[in-house]
Image (tube, rainbow, N blue to C red; front, side):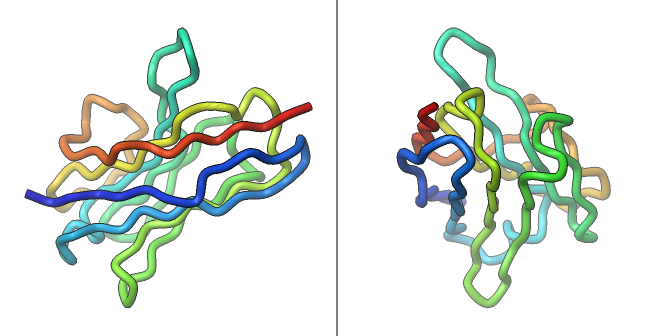
Length: 125
């Protein structure tokens, strides 16, 4: 069973930047569909960014132009670069894998089977 471990969260001021990392314990999982999701208090978990097996990416509208998803196969790690952060970005961020090859970067949490424990991102005004 793959293990996913997020890191890089923290507290930043509005307009700041963070880079989240997700280390996968099984190399091949990095090349399945993988995504970043977030859940704010009292809200449902939502997809933020995803990358498919071919490297195609997808983003929620609120993240377009500010967030970038990428993976480094040499480090077995998925990243989420976040810039121009806003208080509305405050949430627990999770990485996830669907555990199989796929060619559509889905942002639907129900399409993913393996989840990390999450990392807190807090953006202050």
